[in-house]
Image (cartoon, rainbow, N blue to C red; front, side, top):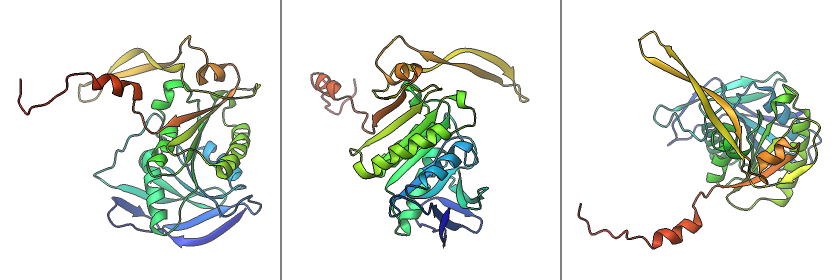
Length: 294
């Protein structure tokens, strides 16, 4: 693997960043990269040391230059949260096992994307794509609402950068070969074909044997709270620990249904959550305001 030259980690005024460590930027790409001019920001929600992000790094390095900005610790279920808006976001060097310096962001997946895009842009380096994953566990159906993996990709859309999120069945355990291979195939096409503005792809790889690929809407499952266990902390407060279960509806034709039938699912998701049909309904309501209180 060929590595790019070292750069000082940029500091951008006006952003709440606290930078820790030497801050050397070491962008890496494979020597046989298809399109070495393209750049990918790689992140996840399982944490920068997770095997899924390493597998993507090695695979996508054959397509583009890859820079890693990922949460320092596991942030599963963090959705699109921004936790460090006022305290600042700490960034530290992370020495990957292959010797490449990556960046551990002490915050959520969305914050990792914010930091990566801002710091690189301040140095005149842009990204063609943000890739998030590979997540340990699928994010089909409405579970994508809770997913830090999916919402890291959604954050990229806010900044005008196309994005793809990859998740896989837990049946693979720590084997990410299938997902990283498919990711390389799909990312090549995203780079060459492009995506519509404000659209990202949510990709889920099912347990083997895989029965093909389905381009499909997202629907059919969510997480449900089955029960709670009640404990007491050392201050006498009650601690409710929810027992989550993966709830699948009887709805057919969505990505959850296709995933359970062994299909790799590719679902385009919109940044714009506006319900267009409801706008017309609300226009007929009496919502006039005269400045008074009733």
